[in-house]
Amino acid sequence: MKGEGGAARGGFTVRGGLYMAGLALLTSLSYGLLRWVESSLREPVPVESQEPVLVIQRFRAVRMTLAGLREYVVEAPLLRQLPGQLGVQIEQPRMDWYQPDGQTREWRLRSAQGWIASDQKQIRLEGEVVMTRTAESGQLPVTLTTRDVLVRPDIRTAETAAPARAVTPGGELRAIGVRAYLNQERLELLSEVRGVYEPPKP
Image (cartoon, rainbow, N blue to C red):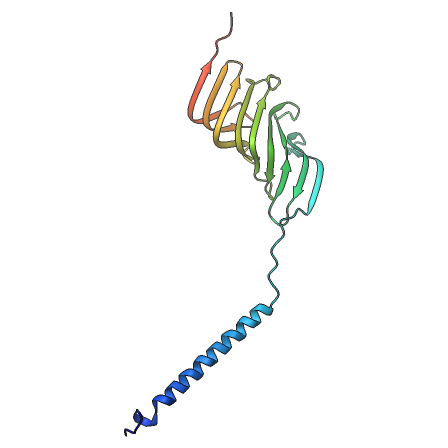
């Protein structure tokens, strides 16, 4: 049946359709507004604080071997324990690595800043890093200057991808990237190695 004023079949009018559509839109907007008000009234999710939970001055930690001998010692004038699993920040850290006798120092590593992972499997020495091995170690003395060194105590290595300069009694070496085996004599210069050799004076 067709009526006047644009009526459609089945008794459904255009005006009625517009009314129903408007009602549905109003209901949807009201529901959305209610959800927005509810979410605004909820407590905000707290952001985890980055502030240290513990501060220690004149920090010193000694790692011992299974035989009870010193393996390495980390010292710093200031330590900040960060919350959760964020690790530990240390200022001006100094790390001494010892030979198997626990008495003879093999390497000394120093930097401006440092970070220790919460599981202690990684130690980052940040900024300029100076690694020194003296003649008292029984090995070739060397002073290595570089940046941003990653120490892995479990495998006893210190490594960087930064430019490095190694000075020995016989000359000077420069390279990009260095890997030192802290319990061995091995020192690997990884790429772009250049050197100057100074023969001993007669």
